[in-house]
Image 1 (cartoon, rainbow, N blue to C red):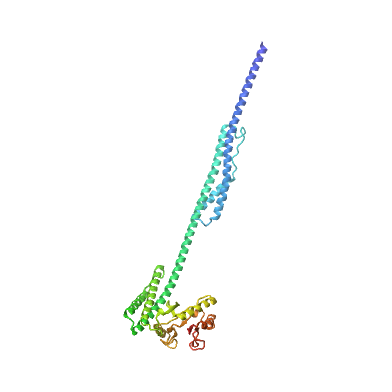
Image 2 (cartoon, rainbow, N blue to C red; image 1 turned 60 degrees about the vertical axis):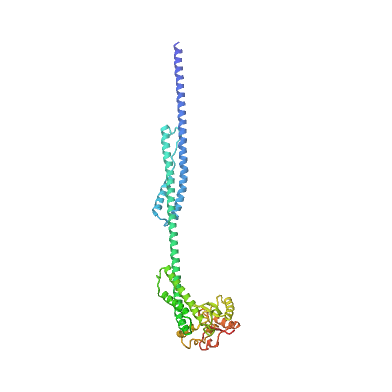
Length: 397
C-alpha cells in the first residue's frame, strides 16, 4: 500500500504542476495578445505622424518659395521673419526619426504600462508634427497676405503716379492752350479797334458797332483776369472765357463789316466767300469761291505729294485788317489799303514753316503746279523781284 500511495501523491503533484503550467502559459498568451493590440494602435499613431511629416516637408518647400519671392515685397517684414523661424523648426522636426515601437514581449513592450508610455510618446510626436505643419501653413498665408497688400499698395501708388502724370500733362496742355488763346484774343481785341474806327466813318449802325464794342470790353476783361497756373480747373475756365470772348468778337466784327459791304476791295460780304481754313490768330480765312475750289484741288494733289495739307495762313483781308497791317508793317512792306489782292479774296499767304521758302520742295511744287489751277506766284514776289515773298500766291482764274 505504501508504494502505491507515494505513487499517487507524486502523480497528483505532477498533474497539478501541469495544470498550473498550462494556466500560466495561457495567461502569458493573452497578455501578448493585449500587448500586440496596443502596439498596433501605437503603430497607427506613428504612421499618421509619418504622413504628417511628409506633408510638413511639402509645407517647408512652399514656405521657402514664398520667402524667396517676397523679399522686400511685404508690408510687414516681421511676418517673413516669423515664417523663417517656422521653417527652421519644421526642418528640425522633419529630420527627426519617428519613435520606435518594439515587438510585444520584448524590451520596452513587456507590460501594459509600456504600451501606454509608447502611445503617449508617439501621440506627442505626431501632434507636434501636425502642429508644426499647421503653424507653418498659417505663417506662410500671413506672408502671402502681406505680399498681396504690398502689391495693392504698389498698384495704388502706380495709379496715383499715373494720375499725377496725367494731371501734369493735362495742366501743361491747358497752359499751352491758354497761351495760344490769350495771344489770339489779344489780336482780336486789337483788330476790333480798327473795325470800330473804320466802320464809324462809313456809317455802320451804332447798335451793331455797340455789340462789338461791348464784347471788346469783355475780351479785355478776360485778358486782365488771372488764374492759378497750378489749378487745372481754373486754367481751363480761363481758356474757355477767353476763347468765348475771342469767337464772339470775331463774329460781331463780321456783323459790322456786313453793314458796310459793297463788293469793293476789303468790303466783300462774307456770305459770298468760301472758308479755306483758320489762320494762326484763330481767325477764319476766306477766298472767293472759285479761287477756293481751285485751291482745294491743289490741296488734294499737294497732300498726296507731301503727306500734309496745303494750309492757308491768310486769305481774304477786310479793309480794317489792311489798315492794321499797314500800321504794323509800314508802307512799302504791305500794299496800300484798298489795293491788295487779299482785299479781293484772290490771294493767299501760306505758312513759311510748311516749307514755303525759296529753294524748298514745297514752294517749288506749288509754283510749278499752281498755274494749272489758276494760282500763280507773282513776279514782284519772286526771288529778286523786289519784295520777295515765297509765301504769297494769287488767283488769276
